[in-house]
Image 1: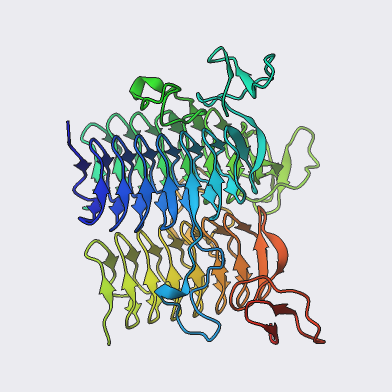
Image 2: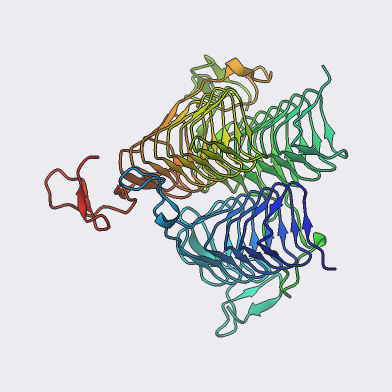
Amino acid sequence: MNRVTIHPTAEVSEKSEIGENTKIWHHSQVRENSKIGSNCILGKNVYIDINVIIGNNVKIQNNVSVYDGVIIEDGVQVGPHACFTNDKFPRAINPDGQLKGGSDWEIDKTIVKYGASIGAHSVIVCGTTIGKFALVGAGSVVTKNVPDHALVYGNPAKIQGYVCLCGHKLKPSQSKGSPGYCEICKKDLTNR
Amino acid sequence: MNRVTIHPTAEVSEKSEIGENTKIWHHSQVRENSKIGSNCILGKNVYIDINVIIGNNVKIQNNVSVYDGVIIEDGVQVGPHACFTNDKFPRAINPDGQLKGGSDWEIDKTIVKYGASIGAHSVIVCGTTIGKFALVGAGSVVTKNVPDHALVYGNPAKIQGYVCLCGHKLKPSQSKGSPGYCEICKKDLTNR
Amino acid sequence: MNRVTIHPTAEVSEKSEIGENTKIWHHSQVRENSKIGSNCILGKNVYIDINVIIGNNVKIQNNVSVYDGVIIEDGVQVGPHACFTNDKFPRAINPDGQLKGGSDWEIDKTIVKYGASIGAHSVIVCGTTIGKFALVGAGSVVTKNVPDHALVYGNPAKIQGYVCLCGHKLKPSQSKGSPGYCEICKKDLTNR
């Protein structure tokens, strides 16, 4: 199957690139020069800004805004209402009182790595990297890099433990060098 | 009057059930097998997932997402931008790297009881019960059950006092057994 | 140029007043008796309630809700997903169990002053004033007044320093009476 599903109320730029089997739902908007992989799902009222890059098998839920400067790798889940940013010094006007123009903004990059999950209603301050299979809890304000497999939450988000590929919290491992044991997967995590 | 108002830009499934005098505003979506009572108001861009149950006299404001597994009883107010959840271990992919399918999710239930209010821009982690006439302050991250009449706020939300039916904070009561006195309603609260 | 741009999917009341060169994007809604100045940008799914007053050169990003009782002065930036409120005691029903009507709400006013910035995904509890060129960090819950040029963030938001017109944090100044020195603008801030 080589079909992209775009709901009639969604607006997808012809200058964007969308992979096969990707579904884009109600009132979502995908702007020019963005690239979305295959088998992705974009929920209701998702906004994909110019230049955004999204991998394969990515699920982005309702009301998520992804801005220019953000890269989302394969297998990432972005929970509902999550918000990315790209400007650390947001001002509508310059110090002289004139409205800022396109060249007045400096964009800070954000990367969400393979398999990571961003919890519902979180905000990711730009300039950060969310590690592989990291898990950002609901309602978090992420202001720093998140290591691979780390569980973070709070405002500001802090490391609260480590999680397995499956999302469950790891227990201390008996094996030397293993970051932890998953009681659900019944095994030690071998590579972080 | 036996009229349901549905704005032309809203999408309401024919397989949902909507009570009389309920109003559903711009760009809202109500999915199949959900049930909404009478005299409810759904604001702009509200999302009601499959299987959601909502009572009578419920007000749900702009940009609220209510997911499968959530029950909202009569007389509840859900403030703007509030977000429910239903998955404690959110992952887009299984540990083998394959995209998760419908049967790979386990849904945790959430109940919001009679007369409770969820503050603007809050997130309710699934598996919790919000008690009768409880009040969740704006911007809260609710991770635990909230007792009847409790005022909670913060990230994570903690009990900060108790409130009357009218929403005002209770003062200590002179009457034995009363949970508090309301200076606005001029009476002791008798049943929590 | 005396042109207002309104995207075909936006709904702007004929009883609102919109200044020249203002742009209103996808699925946004501007209600009756609101007033928006010139050179403003309203992003996707912005909601402007009745009676809201917005100045010139204001940028309001995706999914922002601005409610009756809010005044936004010139040059303000409101980041994506930010939410205003206008009711300190939100209840859907009165103590007698009847649905609240229009006259049962008391509106608390909120003012955002000239040049201020509201960070992404923040909520502003009503009854507060955000000072000139103040900067509210991403994910903040603002519950108190914010002084001019203050940087606040957190839940609840607290003062974390002071910022320049350009948005950068001020260093201590050598000049008597100056609130701080900006290393970017290479000058002392003279008037707060």
